[in-house]
Each structure stands twice: as structure tokens, then as C-alpha cells.
Length: 596
Image 1: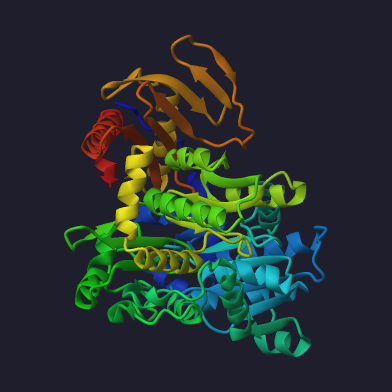
Image 2: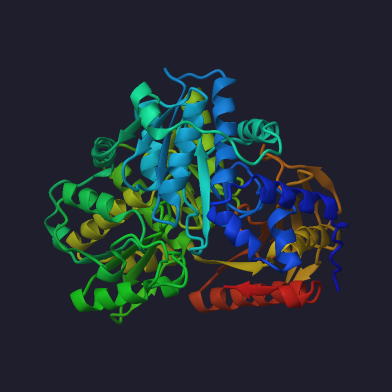
């Protein structure tokens, strides 16, 4: 059994943090009332034993009182750090400013205003969206308005009790590790005082330090979407499509986007069309999950739709379901969506004489290797990066500066895609439009996306992948997640299911270990240090293990290739079951369960 080596709790530290809150919170603050009602000391410790972590993805957490919770005070401290960073960093854009957007979650609009008021207090101008908007539009706005940074108030596809801040640099991409570390230093230097004085909204508006932005930015984004269109006059744009925003931000941008492409039969799931911070029709607003498609499938059956599209609340991830050969709807994995887009894109660019000799596709190390097989057919370079879309965006910027490669497509298995780089984060709106265009093109040729996917498998092989998360919450959970990685690092299995481990890549030590010879060499890929392990098996399968950067999860990625679909599915399930049993046998099962 793998023991959890929990550090001795610093009782004085968390109680000191609690005392600061109890003494500094205004008497009429609802957070103080919530705090006074908590009698469970373990829960109080959980709320105050540390600061809510800020990293390269920004900050995300459960809302409520406490230093380890998201609230106006933790939001203001992040905003202070961003303002200090902007004021102390050489910038390329014309003004020291920030653009702030927000999604449909509880308190998102309030948190967005707090960011704007805080940075405005330090002399940094804030552009604040009047209405909720998707993350890709926020990324676009950073570039369109030429601001120093961008902030999106969202917790992506997390449950309704979560919220967060995604932070973007002046290129519209999520912050680099170096920039995030500098912001964190400024946050730490803010001290332990809870209440920060922030400027008044009306005064900031009067002084020109706050400006509200509206449809003009979204309309400019819609205009930029026209660049992804190959066929402007397809008669098949009347094919029925069902879309659900899962109570999030995408309804209006999707309407505008599809209208601009003259799609005439796009049906929105009525129960999920309007913003709802409780996400009341789904357990989780996650377009990766089959349960999120229940109402959309009902709607699709009513209208005989060929394609179902679903976005998460901030519209950076896209889920897809297709009508199959027996008239039912099959949910696609993130990898399947990616290879469909890639195959279609390369075919179209080749046909139109637009395929560059130095074209590049960027994917993460946990994304399907079918990408590499397709790239080889079209003589296109495939570049791997660490897990997280910010690493894809870093490579886009690098290739833009060096002219070494021409960016074609970037994607990760967790349903994140970027087709045109006027946005520098994953973009579900442009991806949804691209898939609709693809469906219309295939229909004009007498086929469907589903049929094309089967043909791709026949040509390139039966690749299959899945991701499993082990959820371990709280302080003990964080310790156990670290221990899981250390256990695998120090006790690597020699065999996994029916296959032998032949190579291990350790992204902490940056060593590649040949298990057969025992030889260790420096990894060829020049990637940042990260707590990730990748195991290669003798049958071509592989497994990646890493802690989630945004949720209390240890994530396991499994991938296989086989001569037919049934064998691939069987091999995949065997790998998954073996590893989960291996984990369950070596950690306390009382705080652990798997989510498939």
C-alpha cells in the first residue's frame, strides 16, 4: 500500500490566515457570515492552509471564503499582480492595458469588474466586455485591441461551484511559465492584508481608465472566421445541425458565425440555449462527456440531424456526435475530431494548391499518433509539446518569429482545437463552423463525416485512445497525487497488461530510459520540465501519467493501435484496467475513485 506522507500541518499558519479574515472582513460582507457558520475545523483548515494557486493557466477553484477559495479578495490579489507585471515589464503594444471577459458562471461578471477596478487603481486601462463572451473571443480581443494582457473569468467545464481566471499575454496566448512566475512574485509581495482599496467604477470611466466594449469586437472576430471557408457556394448548407451551448457563452457567436456561412438548418437545444450558472440540465457542462449530449440527441432525432455540436461554458472546447450507419448518434473522442479535421484540411489545402512545403501541425504528447501517420502521407511535420494549449501557442509564436514552419493546425486530445491563429487559444466556435463546412462538403460528395472516419481507420490503422482520471480532493488528495507520480517514477511496472515496457520518458528529469538496456539519455525534445511520465510498450501502445493543472485529479492517458477495431478496443480496456488496479492497490481507496 502506498502511504500518504502528509507534511505536518502548520496549525499556526492556517489559523493565522483565518484570524486575518475574521478581523479584516467588513461586518456586512456575506463571506464573513458564511465563515462564521462553519464549525468543522478540517473544513476551515482546507479553506485556509494555503493560498489558492496561481500558475500558467491562471487560477481556478471552488468559490467561497478563504485563502484557498475563489472570492473577490483572491481575485483582487491576482489583478494586483497582473497590474504590477504590466507596469514593470517592457511591452510591445502601444498602451499598458488589459481586456477582461467573463462567462455565465456565478459571480463571473462581478469578478470581471473587480479585475478591471483593481488594475485601474494602478493606472492600467481596462477594456471590459459589456456582456458575457467566449474565451476565444477574449483571446482575439487581446490581439485586436493590442492590449498588454487579457483575463477571462471562467472555470471552463468544471462544475457550477467553481470559477477562475485564465490569463493571456499580449500575443493572445495563455501566459508562459516565466511570465506566470513573475506575476506570482508580485502577488506574493502584496503581503497578507486582505482588503485592497480599489477604484470606483464611475471614476475610472470618467478618467478613461475603464472602457466597455461590445459587439464591435465580436463582429471583428466573426469577420476573421471567413478565412477558414473553402467552399462559399455549397448547396448542401441546408443539412440539419444541432448545437448546444450547455448554458454557456457560445449561443450568440455561433448564431452569427453560422449565419455568415449561410447555414439554414441549425437547431439550438432550447433547454440549454440561455446562460445558466447552475448548468441545471447537466451534471457537468463538459462536452467530452456522453451525459452532456442527452438533450442534444433528443433534439437531433426530432430534426434528423447529421451533426451534433456542443461547447463548454467558455466555448474553448468542442464535443461532437455523428449519426452512424444505423441512425444512432456516436460521440467522438477528442482525438477522432482532431484527425477528421486534419485529414480534411490537408486534402483541401492540397486540392487548392495551398499546402505549404514547411507546414506544421502541433499536438501534445498525450494526443493520438494517428496524427503522425496522416502527416506523413502529406509530407507535413508533426511537432509534440507538453500537455496544455499554451504550449501549442508558444510554438505558433516561435514559428511565426523564425519562419521555420507555417502553422496549419493545433490540437489536444481534450477537445481543444485551433485552425486559424488569429486566436491563440483553443477555439470551439471556429472548430464548430469548420466541422459544419466539412459535413456540407462531404454531403455534396454523397458521403458523411462518419463514413469518412471509417475510411481513415482503414487507411491508417485502428488507433484508439482514452483518458481516465483518479480524483483526489483536498490537501490529502494533493499529497496522494504527488505520491502516485513518485511511486510510478520509482517503481515502474515492467509489464502492463499483456505488453512489456520498453521505454520511459520522464519529463521531470528529462531522461529517456531504455528499459531493455537500462541506458539513460537526454530526451531529444526540448520541452520545459513537467511532472509527467510516458511509458512506451513493445506493441506500440503508450501511457501518459500526470497531475491535472486545474483540477484535483491524477490523469492517465492510454493509446493503442491494432489491425481491427475490436482488438483495439480490447487492448485499450486491458491497459486501462491493469493500470487502475495497479493504482488502487497502492493508494488508499477511501479517497479515490475513477472517472471514465
